[in-house]
Length: 257
Image (cartoon, rainbow, N blue to C red):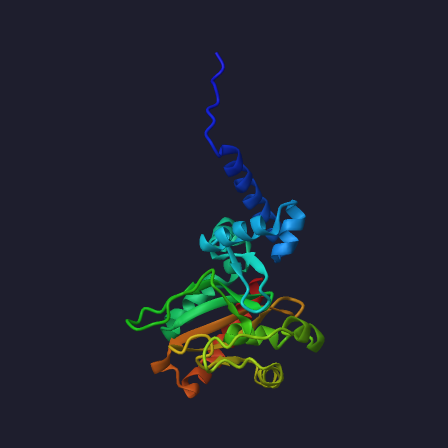
């Protein structure tokens, strides 16, 4: 005897929404970013429906909206799921034990970041054991120009590509954020000269940070390694003292890539 499928009012509409939400996630995974109009056109649905689905996905953490470009991207929840699925297949495999040693040596929080559009994505972290410390931010996406790890990677980009990426109005995350393109270009020149970037409370007034690039075998900056400290322990002179151990650790990670 064949079981009878029970149907409830609104079931078809609910299933359709679920299917479209999954298709949106797949599109974001393929394209990297989407606008509402692009999503509605690709799925053959109204812009209002597309906006509603994207808003729901944002509310649940599966999708987030880039503060700079206003595009929608995969969110923290999906990134964390993806990172967990990748396990030891990505750069984290090469970096994590080196990061753990650095965090133990300096007793400060260490982060691994990559560029994602105009944002800097925190893909791994090892937390300090001190009572007052910066917590790890794995999965978080912040404006790249407001983080040390993002700035050190932006500084490696060709001028034309950089101007295209940062051609929109850049948000001032705090009153310390450098968000005028000419000022950023000037700072990027200084970062390239020094080999490291600083965060002077530009992403969060309660912390300071310093970062160096991690390079692949071809010499390309593929990620950044950052140390984040509470403001009370964040004197610039102390941060600069982290440059050598940071660069040594970044070089060790590069060898393992």
